[in-house]
Length: 153
Image (tube, rainbow, N blue to C red):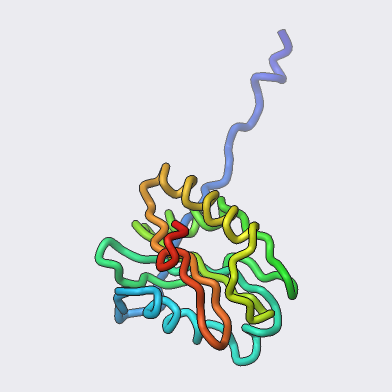
């Protein structure tokens, strides 16, 4: 037997996982309107009508906002969303609930087939981690569509 095989260096680098909230005050989400009012200012002026952005709002057990993050940035008609990235962020923030959100640059508030699919995929995956999907909002500068309010969750 070749002893060289047994001399493999099995050292691997340590992975450091961190989450740092930049917010001291914790706003509470009572409704889809509250979530919309919090998320709308996260879009720089003019960008909500420019291209699609997918964001997630993280909540603790008391429905207080831990923060938000940009998951993906796309083009005029869509953006690619990776469910694993959403769950990774939710786990890092110790969230027990999340609100999905993305904008429609067209101003159309009707959810697409892809919007329905990603909502179901995230909901199914999050359920395994005991993370609740409270809502999925489609935002425009003129208003929003709530999956929860419309019975789509």
